[in-house]
Amino acid sequence: MFDDNPIIKKIAIFFGVSVDCLHTSPIRDLSENNVWKIEIGQNTFALKQHFIHTPIGECKFTPFEIESKILKVLKSTGCSVPKIIWQSEKDQSLLIEWCGNQTLDDMIQKSRINWKATVSHAILQFYYIEKAFQKSQDDLTPYVFPVDQDQQLQGILGQCRKIVSYIVQSSERVQRTNHQKRIDLCWNNISNYLFSTQKSLGSLDHNTHNILINQQKTFFIDFASIGWNWQAKRLVQSFNSLGANQPGGNFVSLINQEIIEACMEISGQKQANADIDLHNLLFYLSIIHRILRATSRPNHPDSVRLRKAWGNLKTRLDRAINIIIKSNLSNYAEANTIRQIIADCWLTKNTQE
Ligand SMILES: Nc1ncnc2c1ncn2[C@@H]1O[C@H](COP(=O)(O)OP(=O)(O)O)[C@@H](O)[C@H]1O
Ligand SMILES: [Mg+2]
Image (cartoon, rainbow, N blue to C red; front, side):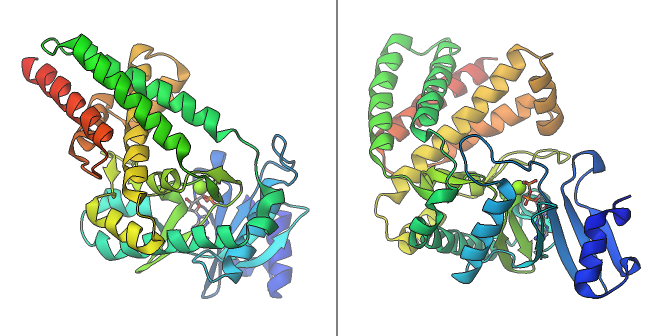
């Protein structure tokens, strides 16, 4: 049992209490758990153990060292991240402030009400963290994980382009060649635009499980890898709930025009709407790519895992298409054309069936 773990003994010594005073519970199923809720009397903490004890790839620091450094830097600039209470380099473990039982993903999937205040708070915190990374750029550069984001984006654009083509081809009635020409033109403009936008420093792991809700307050967690990436991509990853492994879970996008206006106001970036719109479009086209790949090779272990996490893939596909068609996030002409083409083809196909 974890209570016998030497780390628990060290924490008990740190607090000057006996091991019996610590109540520990895993956050996930034991087989894949790395975070423990630790209760000592009235106080609650999270213990995060890093299982990878060596730097990954060409990075100079271990995930534990990166997370410890980033949490300290962000906390010292007033960001809403957990405070480090105790840490052990030998055990690559961090004892941090408890930030509540609920992730943003849990909240969005379980209740459809009262999001607004929480999401607004989280958006504000998101931009504080973005600013803190910008301010501490020189100090944090040695911790950067060298990953070729341009190459990744190129790959994503290629995949997404194929998905749009697939949707057009699977539609019986539309004039395919016409559409293909329009798609090529749009895709060129979208690619050129996205590659012309600046990347900035931030966490490389953004998702709705890395935002925690404690009453009305929101906290950002999980800073074990950082790198250069597009801010809009981070925002899209943070504010789209996937609802994986939740009974009846499905995609929920928190990004709407109101949120984008708030983002533009907070960040002062006039083109933020186009950036967010395009990254959001790619996010959902990539999801459709994953679903269709899983459907085409149902017995592959990845497909089995995806079905286990996402449930009925047809329901998921319909939701992803629906979000794309309905997400009127900017006036970026090519994004609207792609949405229109998808709407025409998908609706025609599905009303014929
Ligand atoms: N400080 C904390 N307070 C409350 N829960 C936490 C805290 N840190 C982590 N958790 C829980 O543990 C999960 C995994 O933690 P995270 O730091 O994101 O590690 P991982 O790298 O495994 O994703 C989170 O999604 C959250 O549910
Ligand atoms: Mg995480």
